[in-house]
Image 1 (cartoon, chains in turn orange, brown):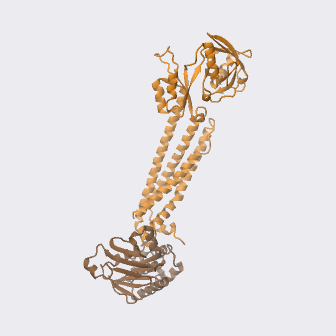
Image 2: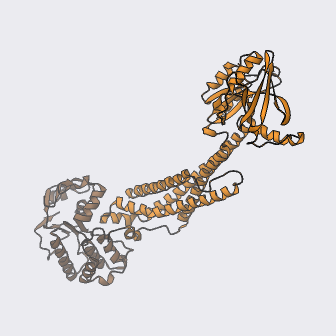
Image 3: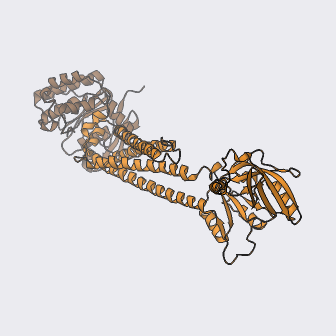
Length: 393
Length: 216
């Protein structure tokens, strides 16, 4: 028989009232549940409001325009090349591109199939700012067909008012089949082109044509080189970056409200979840302190016995190892229970929100990793504490 | 390989009066204790008997000079080295016995035995029967008489391997018959191990045939 914990356990005088130990168990378990749930919630919020569309490829894309006030009304409120350059060079902005618009009159009609004709504005932007660029979205001088990317919101709007105007409603797949006629006219001439919708954009709310076409047509019909833009698109890692918000405010630039609102909600939710995380860390620390008091009390009560065991030849290192090992199953059970509770919580949460988003019913791997780290941390702190107390004897 | 030895190099306890130091054959001298030796150290009360036991066993460091174990100073031992020294090389019967008062006699012996088992549990029973404390094994140590506790402490000291056995007034509460009985067991055990006995007492023990007797 080799000595183990059972050899020394009769010599350890535990606290007569077990309440401090039980309170420590419950507190630690609650703290860990709170911490794991907050991490999981943080990731859920990221998935919900991070938005697949805005944050594709890890960046936020937003359009900014100048705020129209009573003071600047009537002036040219477009961005100059210098202003665009200034935006591009800000450290918190990854890239910026002007959304150039037509400097000539553009009219579109759907021919005989859909009796529909309207004046419209055309805009163009660098291809890499468009969420999905179909291979056919290009134009060269001399070509009579102009590909168009339409805002998905516009199609939705069209489908709302189409029935009242006796126009057919169109699905996303059928819209590409509609042949449109684009008439461009200006001081320097006019031209007729066929146009077709090759894609829908949920990021940019406008009618997009290839940049090569718009620059050419502005020169051709408007007689102007494209220099100014009413809107600039920003590519940034974080739309809620305070420095970015401050910069835009100082310059009097106006950001699409929907995007900033969702970013603000995201920040509020994440702050709430982070606050919960901090609170849970405090609960864990308090529970660990309760454990520490319990251990100190036990070692103080068993001081004479522990000293005598050392006198008989038990090494302090062996004694502290045995005592620390005793707590490993306790901590393991606490962490596993907390992990299980977090799993149940996430499963219920995913069911409750299943109509809105596909949320995983399982907890994310970082939550499991944090649980593992917490377990190791508890075991480490515990063994350090025991060893320190025993060396003090 | 060197034969195991303990050397006392000019040991002086911090508190000891000068005149006691001058008369002593142990303090402030070089003393070599060889493996297998039967040594007797005789001293009146207050001359530092128990201090000497504690110094050699490695319980205190408040003295000048050195206790060398196989040439290495005990003062340089780490806590693990000291634990190994007490577990494998040296055993002791303290004057104050140092039993766990609220544990059974059996558990008091067992906690030492399992640390580095030299004997089986049945051997413990046999020893307890031989020393007349078998009936007391299940009794709390504090409820045993001092003489019974002394015999339990002797049995506990014999449960491990050792090269040196320190005995600090081991028979102080035993009648002659029980003392001789206990001594016979101790001598048997030490002979089997080839171990040294360092007997420290107030006066010479008549049945202990020491090879050397020193006055502290």
